[in-house]
Length: 149
Image: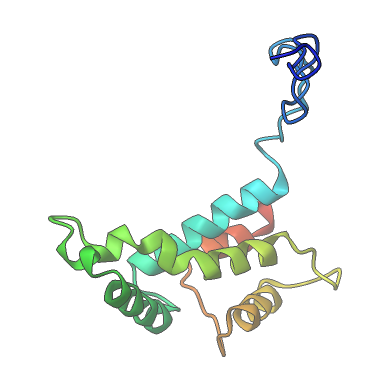
């Protein structure tokens, strides 16, 4: 091999990325606040939809249909040992409504003096429900109470 065709050791091959500074010494962007409104709304929406699922409230028919479809597509869920497919798939089954609920909870109202009933009507509409009437102790009612936030 002659010197003209041999690679030089002074520079890395073209496909090799440039060396980066030590990641420990590189400045890091600030971490998102743990109490941001979006994070808080996501936690609340997940708690609300999980409770509705566990107590079979509001969206039961839709979620049961989705669970049936998921179990039919993934037969191993029915034979998962002692674990219930209902619990194994809960997060997947409720995810679309949890996202919709979280987005709704973070959307500022377009009217300055919205009541809890107005908010429930908006949430019901976004979830595709004709009406939403949560019980007095429902976590959604707690979220909609002004002293809660």
